[in-house]
Image 1: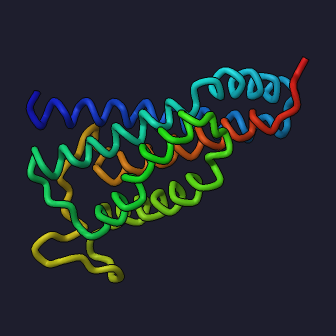
Image 2 (image 1 turned 45 degrees about the horizontal axis):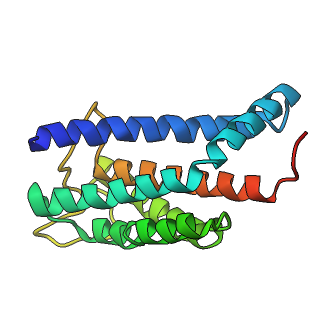
Length: 186
């Protein structure tokens, strides 16, 4: 598969991740005001919690391998903000694999802060790509953080791919932890 094929694959995975994040977020918000929505949320989270940690591991591994593909195969040199996002993402598969192996549903205690920091960097990087003339953080002149290597469906770039991955990992470990702490429903 060539670079365009991988771009399409990663863009489609990003859309799936965004859809999941939006679904989890909307469900959590509406469950606060509606008993029916709360029941739907509980049913959804019960189903997802059974596979949440393995899914989070898969998301982290895919994001890690995807970033390595872009830098080592497609020869897209990572900028400084990309490196910061990598620093947050690369430990995820290891942490989540250990949590999965040990059955540690409290993995959110140590994964959530890293995922949220990575998401914040991704948001900043994405908006910097969209508005490159702003002042503030400055990357290297020969590899600026404003350079867009991938632009799919008129909104998906590499920082948005990372943001979708961080967001989905955060939700999955949150749901796994919530279900582990919830009293049994009968």
